[in-house]
Image 1 (cartoon, rainbow, N blue to C red):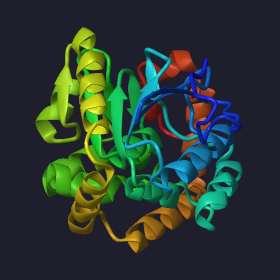
Image 2 (cartoon, one colour):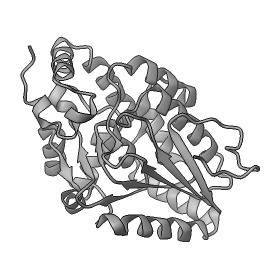
Image 3 (cartoon, rainbow, N blue to C red):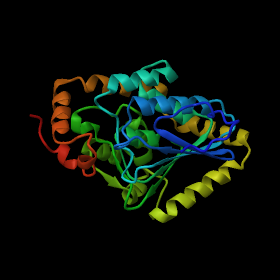
Image 4 (cartoon, rainbow, N blue to C red):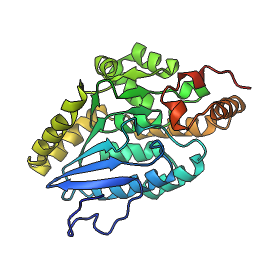
Length: 284
């Protein structure tokens, strides 16, 4: 259930996969897209609506993203609906690319924080990488950039962010190994700001968000703009990787691997709790 004021810019906006709660100048967004929070056309459509408001720099200084699902933050894209979700992203950027939508999230005037409890793989990982800060729950959060297991390049800025955050060697380990990383290792590698025991995560993130929300908006936006000027990858890099992903999933071997994984339970909740076995099965 969303908790928004009558004068809110979201008062007349309908969301299918996001629940909003306003606390002054802080906005808390809970992702809920059963059965496993896949990034499909409905979630992309909702994110477009959200980003369009945040781009204006009005009312909300900080946004916290969390999940209603204890096992999944954002699992990954729905590989059966690539054309459909890309079409929804074009409503924001003019180009059929969730990579460019994520870039807009990184550029938006609000400070964005990902509070990660559960699995966030593929484009889910790229979503949190394009947030300004990431905090994870120990024993619950899991990260992966597994696109190489299907023979494709991450299309939403994964390589652009992971290389400067983790360093070349660790980024290649993550991108080519396609493995799962828990919250402690993600913190050690630099994938997240900090990891917390589950009971301590929400109080920390909430306190941080509310503190930031009390600061003057012009200063917050200036700081974010300067940090982005130093660290945000060029937009053409996003565009290149988005195109590589889109073309890569059409190649015969990638298609065969995806089909084999689907037969073994890919994109079902039960199989994706422990996803490694799906990637270790050769294509039929």
